[in-house]
Length: 242
Length: 267
Image 1 (tube, one colour):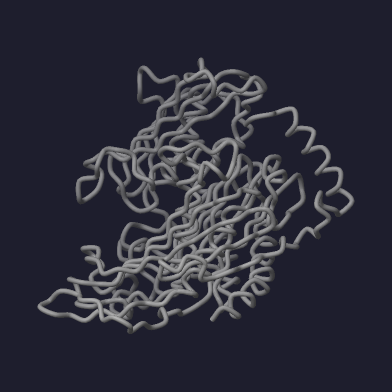
Image 2 (image 1 turned 90 degrees about the vertical axis):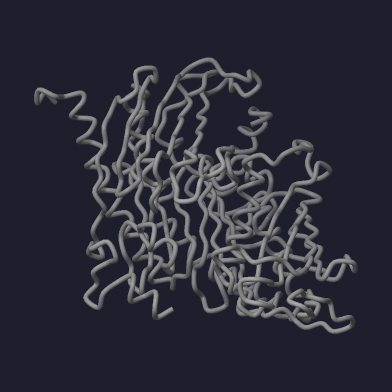
């Protein structure tokens, strides 16, 4: 245990990738990167490289899935076989199916589905290269792609993880810290409404640490929101209009 | 997603009652349904439990056998928890490959037991990097009445607590069963999963099927014997505020303590 701790963090709190405790990795988002999709976004979040494409509202197939009172949201999170060190089998794994579900449930509160009964909005996410925190980065891109598709939303959804590494709470856990660290907590927030729409944890946290960790992640979500907002502004308000 | 009109009517009724501090089955908001645990129900398994949580009923069997370790985890035994909803358990359940709800259920149950480090996996190694003991904890929902997450988790924990680990000896680098010698599993802590549903502004512990059909969001929090929070999963189509989540974490610790006493009797 002691061995890994010295590798993950120096005495004065500098992390294995040179970041401070409360520092995010570099994030860049491009909006409208796909021709065919109704809305799309590409995000680079540390070493994560992720594409998100949105189609809809459109007819539901299979038809029995349609809801006469409301639209439905479907989400597929998928990792390319070449996205990780060892080739990943292209068939969806149980992990990917679970992540698809939690991402869908994180986006759903933000999307005004009531306006589109009997239709579906499909969100397709492709992880081209994975680093730690790919579900959060994927969510960030998906929320921007939904906005780019012109779908009415109550708020954006911004996601970021926090965790515990070498007994300290850190923001935005990277791959090494996720593998060797003590806890990883991905969080998604609707920043203007203060609603948390995704929360997962694996690891071990004391109740006070649980609180700090969640608050740290929420600070990260708000910073991610600024990047998302700027990316959307760049596409839609290029000439400085508001 | 079926019977939308009925769900709406149920929701109205459940919400009206919650406004007066009551639940549809008369429980307090932070009160679980009675938990009945019976162990040793499947003698051919190394450990087993039949658990009833209200109307929800689960059977779990633990099978223990020698196995090869995972390539990057040669100093640890294998622990795998699964869960499935049998077609006889629910009118909406179908045979066939698991859907996303069932996959989530199995993964959340597994995560709770894994992340609390209930079992000292280092003690399940026979030859490092070559041969380890594998524990397979398979839960079947046989009657579904809401809150399958906690029911499956309790049944898995009870199954593990009731199990006896057969002894294996290494002969010519291969594990050989030593007849008639068993030991208790290396237990480090007792995980307790507590699931709460948010219906309107109210948080209720251990939701029934009716409460689940009209809840806004759900959260499952697993704590260990030392009062640490070890696994969390939010579900459902809406969210929580940060205050609500902190309230949930306290509730999970409180309710967890009561359930843990029931587990202690099994040790």
